Image 1 (cartoon, rainbow, N blue to C red):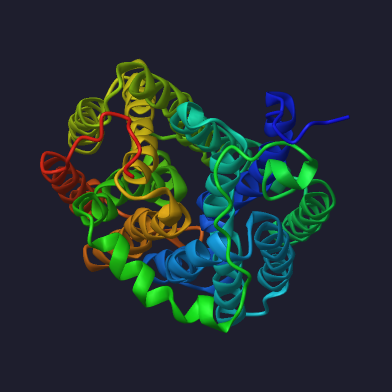
Image 2: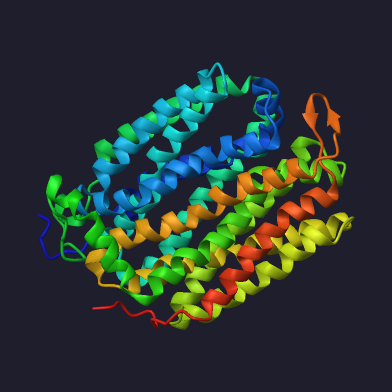
Length: 431
């Protein structure tokens, strides 16, 4: 007989969390998939770089808007219902995107996908806080990034190879079916907290029953989390790092490498995927080192500074030898893993009862980076386009890319400056 005071075994905790992580994996797949479809999407819908940037960013527009409501719902509905509903709606949005006869319906599909997968990471953080001891939180958050990057890498070379055999529309329909299947598994097996399985809860349950009163309290909770100094700073800081990574690996890196390093789309997607794999490795490493050192700020500052230097080399040193290019991409991706420190950092900066809300707020800031930078880089590319076309697709010069990528560097530099003003938590939860 299971005694109420018995803590859940780690194996069970990983199963609960892992099913949620599968949905997060699919959310990253959807986030990055347009990077290997740029030519097909521009050709099928007859669009420019600016419009393509917006089509990709429609995912982020709704994703960002949904973050604060998602944080509130994670604190009220619980992750099980939230993740199940998200996976179901994401499947429907993917069907709409795959069947879109024109750019309007394609954008509507991306908008629906972004709104629904917005629940994935916050729900996953809520499961981590409920099912794991607090000392594991940063490391488990790093593992979440690892799962996400697996999804992103799946949207790189594997997806590109499949597109040589099947149309992008057929493949997206298959993705819709997989996403809905994950939602069914979450509903059947996942529980919000250990008490639902007969084990002792690791934290006091503070979920409120869902209802109109809870949703009306959104503004009050948001105002409360922003009353803490680190919230405002950590709203903007990770946006620069994630914005740089997903603007390059998630959209503009493949055409940049193809045009200026003479690579095929498949070869370029391998390199952008390598950057994402390094990001996946760097996340758990930075999370683990941060937990081990008992500090959040120094490692975060170091990682951000190294990102700024390495992105500058990648963008403004043309004609890098292949081994230098690969090394720089891997190093940049690894250092970008420092962003996972944000979630433990901000969680410890506020009372635990606000964990879901502040996670939503911070994730809103995180996704604001690619939401703004993807179309902004595309706009700069079109402004500096010299008229080159190949196979019905616009070709952009090196100077155009450098001007567009300068926006990325400015935000990463801002992140570094703002980090210096954060207040160290010493890995201790605010009470």
